[in-house]
Image (cartoon, rainbow, N blue to C red; front, side, top):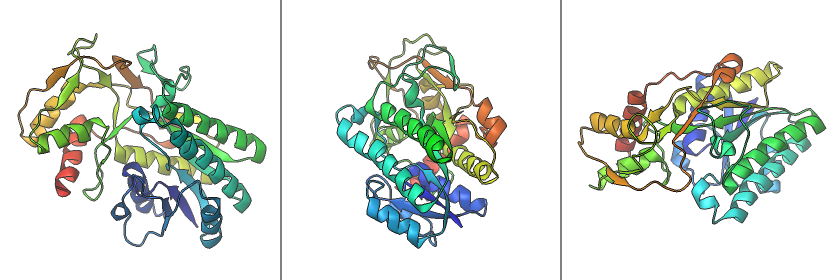
Length: 320
């Protein structure tokens, strides 16, 4: 038996596949390669190139492989761009998820770990976000992730689906030089690409009510995120009742300015970031409480900020 990892050729998904392999759990990868990379999937892992919106491909996959559960990461993931592409976002993240759940039900599959997001909270009014913090998504992306959680909940009521949803915060770093973050919107790639191109990285706002005036965010290492999926899958296989959602956060935060300083130290490239005005809607601080996930699925923040930066830079350099 194996676990299907949808979006398993992406940055986070490829790390999940490697974490499952380390735990001696077989996987099958489904990815349409719209943002994933075939080379991110290790040799020997069965790979199906298809979209989660393709019901025929899903039915064929579940007929061809013996699947024990699903880790669902596939979907449209760019929160900012989702504002101008709402229909694409809803098609991939809502219609696609519904079709996946339908195919699972038709195949008699009853376990799923869903990739959700901190975007469901929008701009929280509290210093530390818990699972009970009210949700208020401010982009189509965040809305679709919340709807995905509702689909898990409602399918659980209707069919007994065993499920949990993991809300990620700022995922960074690399657990292998074979895989790196290729997003054109995330902080680490933006900094690295600027340095590689000889440009100066930018900070948007240095007048926030934080220790150094720059935004504070909860950065978590992608390998730790991947391990949380293994913990959740093992719990579901053991029949353990899990909470419907878990935050994957450290309980503390790091400022953008501190990240910039760490990048300069790790890379040896000294620079003074360009300071630009605040971007509308950027909260001063978003930090998550991950105690529930620690209690139930073994979540832990095992990496320092320095190791996050160093591992991310090493992987980026390997693909220079």
